[in-house]
Image 1 (cartoon, rainbow, N blue to C red):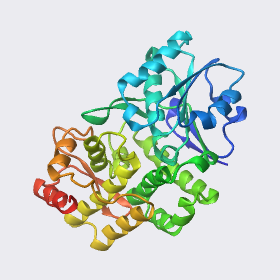
Image 2 (image 1 turned 60 degrees about the vertical axis):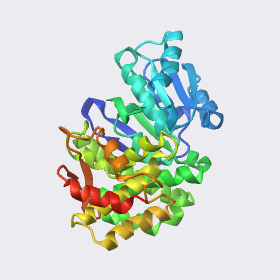
Image 3 (image 1 turned 45 degrees about the vertical axis):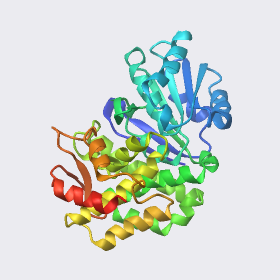
Image 4 (image 1 turned 120 degrees about the horizontal axis):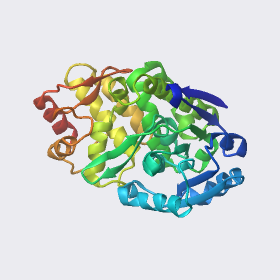
Length: 358
C-alpha cells in the first residue's frame, strides 16, 4: 500500500495505491455527510458496483449507470446524474463517487462542481490511465463536437483510491492506453523513470503487481508535485499536456471514441518528438526511442490514415491551450525535459505534419 498527498492547502487530499481498497475502511472516511451518489458505467457496474455499494451500506446510497465510452462524455449525459441527485433530494452535503475510467471521473467531477454550486466527490479510477493521470489534479469536464474538454471546471476530489486489483479485468487495449500517460511522465520530466519504463515494459504490460504499483506511484507523485505548484494550469502544469495537442486533434477528427484517449496521446507524443527534432532539439535516435517505446506498449505512433495536415491545423486552432490565437505546443529540449513552445514557425509545423501524415 502506498499513500501520496496532493498539497493544496485546505483542498489537499490523499491518493491511496494498492489493493484491496474498495472496502468500508478505505471508503467511509472519505464521505462527507450521509448521502452518497455512486456513478459508474455499464462496463464497470457488473464488476465493482456491488462492492462499493456494500462498503457504503451505512450511508444513504443512490446509483447511476451511464453508457461506457468517450462518445458519451457530453453535456446531455450529465442529466442522469443531476436528475438522480434531485430525485433523492440530496443536499450540498452529498458526496459523489466516480467509479470508472477517465470519462466517468471527468463527468462526475464536473457534475459535482456544478450540483448546487459544488459538492464533494471521490475518485475510484478503474483504468490505468485514470489511476496515473485523470483522477488526480481536479480537471473535470465534458467534450464538445468542436473540441475536447472545452466545457469544464477545476474541482478537486476529497480523495483518490487507486485499487491496483481492478486492473486485472482491464483489456489489453485499455492497458496500452494507460501506458501512454505513464510514458508521458518519463518524457516530460524524468529520463531515469523513462529508462525504468523501458526496462520493465514487459512486466507492466503483463500487469505485474509490483511494477504497476511503482509506475502508478511515480506517475501520481510527479503529477501531485506539479499540481501543487500550479493548480489551474497557469504555468508548469501545461507540461502535463505533452502529446495532447496532436492527440486531441486526432480524437476530434475521428469522433470521440474511435481511438482511445491514450492511443491518441501515444501518436501525439511521437509527433511532438518529431517536431522537437525538426526544430533542432532531439536527435533522430531520440525520436526513434520514443516511437519504439510507444509501439512496444501497444500504442499507435502515426496519425490515422487519411488525416491531413489541414485536418490537424483546423482542430488545433480551437485547442484550449492556445493563447491569444497562437498555438501552444509541449515539446522536448531533451528526453525528460519538456517545455512550453509558444512560437513555432508555421513552416516548421507544416513540414512536420507533412512528414507524419500519410
